[in-house]
Length: 385
Image (cartoon, rainbow, N blue to C red; front, side):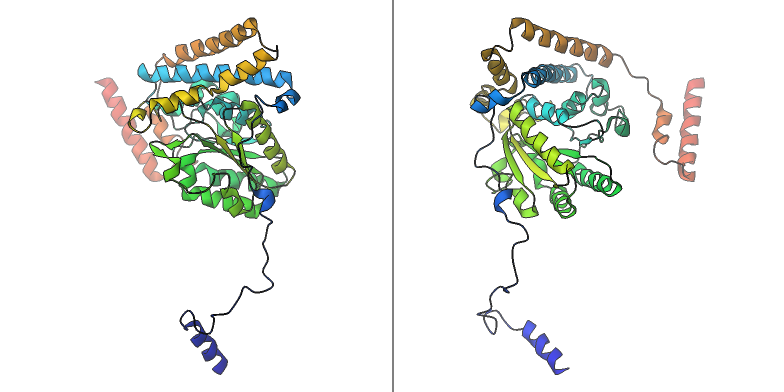
């Protein structure tokens, strides 16, 4: 009893008394050596460097065609908002390299967890563009079957898709499935608690998941400097015990390389990786945003000179891999996609109000059945009138 009283009183002692000269116990040691986890001082670049000579020409041309298609997709979707066919569209113009590379590095069995801005990544993974835009049209919360396409629903709340990605990846690992999840998030999403929770669990569980942060400079109107004082967002990885990688987000070859390595590491049991892709949002946050209120036109023009489509096109042209015919073929294929998207989005969808009750519960509750019957009666009465 005396020893208990002694320990209790020790806890109550003010700082600077008996504990003034205590040191860290000698058995303490770092759980993980931080050095291998630290990102490079500068974002990795391939285009315009000697490293591009090692890149597969077929891959470069395929990425170029996808970038051109992605740019046309962005401009067409933006036009649809002005025509009233989309309620809102968060453009990824200027960020196409991240979107295309994210889709390209995944196998068919893997999962993509996109944010609301990542419809292009979903389309590049093979999703019908109309289905990808259904949420932004306001027709359905998700216009596609996530399980069929291995694409989680487009996530509008910031970063809430990240814990979902970790959960799926961890479950796949427990089941012995050879599956990797790639979760996309913006720099604004890294300020959310879901980001912390996802990275912490992913590292503790060594879940096969890759986090791709598209740092486009702004969380709507809030610049990165007002969100974090970290040297880079990639540095945040070290605190969780996973590697952080920093890459030029407008260099599609570099992004493809870094994500390929991260996915391969996750697949062989090496655990998660946090990749920060430094890019820029050329367009406004959405069509409802006035970006001139928080950034200068000169800043935007500076980034236009580092356009992901143009820097790859210059590389391919300089190496003799792309000529005028090749550029024309890529542009025509992109225009065909845009024309098809435009035509189908201009057709009014046929909506059934009873669908409100079709996908809430596997077995409808009594209250839901009552509500459905009430709406059905009202619709029938309106039809008779």
